[in-house]
Structure formats: C-alpha cells, structure tokens
Amino acid sequence: MSALDFVKIASRNKRRTFFLVLFLVLMLYFIGRLIDYASGAGGFFTFLALLIALLQSLISYYWGDKIVLASVGARKPNLSDYEERQFVNVVEELSIAAGLPTPKCYIMDDPSPNAFATGRDPKHASVCATTGLLKLLNREELEGVIGHELSHIKNRDVLTMTMVAILVGAIVIIADILRFQLYVGGARRRRDEKDSGGELLVILILFLIVLLASIIGKLMALAISRAREYMADAGSVAITRNPLALASALEKIAIYSRPMQVSDAVSHLFISDPKKRGLSEKDSLWANLWSTHPPIWKRIAILKQMAGLSA
View 1 (cartoon, rainbow, N blue to C red):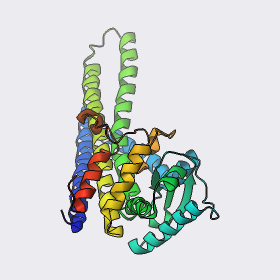
View 2 (view 1 turned 60 degrees about the vertical axis):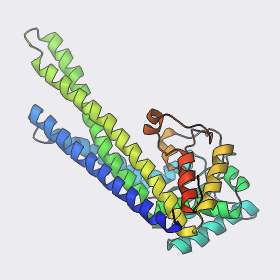
View 3 (view 1 turned 180 degrees about the vertical axis):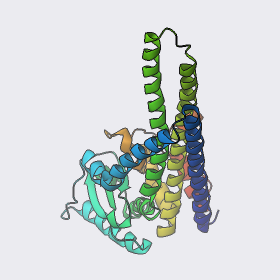
View 4 (view 1 turned 30 degrees about the vertical axis):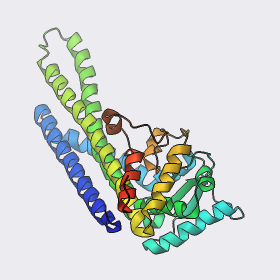
C-alpha cells in the first residue's frame, strides 16, 4: 500500500459515513410514518421527537466544547514548560500545514497518554492533550497525534456526530413517548374493565419496534464514530506524510494507557478509548460493535501498510 492510499481510505470512510447517516434518516422517517399512521397523530410525534432532539443537540453543538473541557479539568498550557510549549508549537505548525486556523490549546493533567479535539467548526476548535501524552511521545509521534486531531476539526466531525445524535436521539425519544403511553394506557385499562386492550397491544408492538430501531440507531452511530477515526488517521498522514510516526504513537498509547476518569459521553472524542487499555487485547466482534473506536491494533496495521511495511 502506497503512502497516497490514505486518500482511498478517507474516501471509503466518507462513503460509509454517508450511507450510515442516510440509513438513520430513512429509519427515522419510516418509524415516524408508522407511529403517526397507527396513532392518527398526523406527524405530531415525529415532529416533537425531532424538536426535542434538535434542542438537545444545539446546546451540545454551541456549548459542548466548553462543557467537555470543564468536565475533564482542562487548563491552558504553561509555556515555561518545555513539553507544553512544544505541544503548542506543533499545533501551530501543523495548523498552517493543514490550512486551518490555529485551535486553542489545552492540557489535561492525567498520566494516561491521550488527546482529543472539540469545537463546532475550525474557527471555534480546541485541541487538548494529557500530560502523560506529552511526556511519552517524541516530536514526530506528537505530530502524528496532533495531525489526527486536526483532521477531526477539518472534517467537521463534531458537526457530523451532532447530526447523528439528532437522528438517534429522535428515535430514542419516540421510544420514550411510547413507553409513557404504555404506562398511561395500562393505568387507564385497569380503571376501565370494558377496555379490550387492543389499543394497548398496538402501542406495545410499536414500542418494541422502535426500541429495536433505537438499538440499531445507536449501533449505526458507533459505526460512524469508528469510521471517523479511520478517516482522522488517514488525514494525519495527509498532513504529516509520516504514517509510522502515528503508528508508533498509537503503540505507545496502547501500551502505557490506563483507564481514565472521564464521562462516557466524551469517550468518543479521544484518539484512543479512555476506558480501555492493552495493545494485545483483541476484543470480540460483539464488543467492537459497541465500541466508539476501532481496535487500535487494526489502526496500527493499516498505518504500517500505508508505509509499505507488513503489519
């Protein structure tokens, strides 16, 4: 595999993301039509679910970066510290190479090596690295990691995942509405002995359908998250032209990482899953389906193939 094959990898994962998002849109549409047809609500439930999910996602979109940075205790870099100053310099240099505005830099005081990017667009972006990462990596490896995070910014992955959250959130909200109707309908039926329970049975069937759809929707969202990680790896190579540096960085991160005390809600942002550890631990297919990140050993193998080496 030539070094230029990062373009093919990025294109493949863009197509994968597009079709997964399209699947979510169609699934929400057909579920909404099914619920509205069965209930005679004339589109009310679908509109309500989308509205609630949209409001939740707008809050996350516009204020999510501040919430995330505060939740991990991020601070501004100390420029008198060599490692933190080098981090800022690398971010500035690679931002120029990537054609991006320089994002704000933050430090997370944690010995586990990791990093993440956040922000709704390139003009409002931030990159955060742990102290453990800065101590562990050499400059080339750090460039590989920063290139990965800048690729997330350049690809507007926060916008993509916000859109996905709206779609999946709407399906989950519809399931919550139906569960509430089941509860209310059950109470009404207990009061009315003449009720045949037919209406309640219809709601129960619809609830089970939507519950299954919400599970599928979450799996689709996780698949999109994994695809964006592959894209960001390829994007890092596009910026640095050094796949082995990122591969080496990921190897060190996997070897020296420890589970981090961060919320599950922000785990998908990190370059490596902060809840996992171990390079040699190859999870089962089932575990990988529920993971926000692809297996790190697989990412390393692809990067080595980009460099023309066997995995």
